[in-house]
Length: 270
Image (cartoon, rainbow, N blue to C red; front, side, top):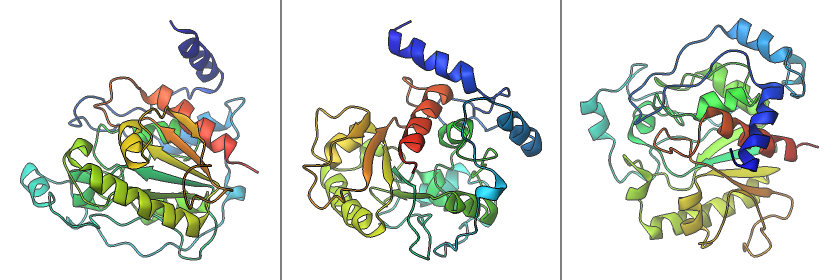
């Protein structure tokens, strides 16, 4: 095992959750297992070395209104998905505070997948490892199931912890590699303007390949980025790149993704 992986495995051993929270991997056809939320919270509270948030840390943050799921709370069928492959530049709504309160972490996807657009919820497709890894890292107190839409409870939990979500490009596609270079670069310019307005403590882009194209950095690597040569980027907002959480990314698993989220979260603290 490479030294870096060994160190990561050692860190996970110190604060790994006892239960398996990962969604099934592969091509996105699996389903995320449901878990006992009370037990998950109990397990997490007993893990040493994890600075978990408790109810006393939370405060309710009013969200920018989001549209309900176009499918009314059900999962999409194959026929449904085909309808959401369109040129709509705003296929899903962002998860952002209405009050202008500063975010601790703005998570940036590349663009919505068809399932995500069909239910108007980020990283909604079963098999995507985003929500399982976010939970395992300690950033949520239960495993979010967004497969039929994002609940008001889950939206409130994210915002109360200072976590927002958006995308570089708003158009929904079956795969991120269907986006053009022009779309990614235009989306990056829009993202920079948004970050300058929101001024989150940290921004994490989920996907290194698209990041390299969007930001014009063909040699960029995962981790924190130097923003000195990014015109318009606010000096008090860190920029990170984390791996694409899709089940199609064979280089990562829930544990390795959780380590990345935890690294960003800890670095964005006071």
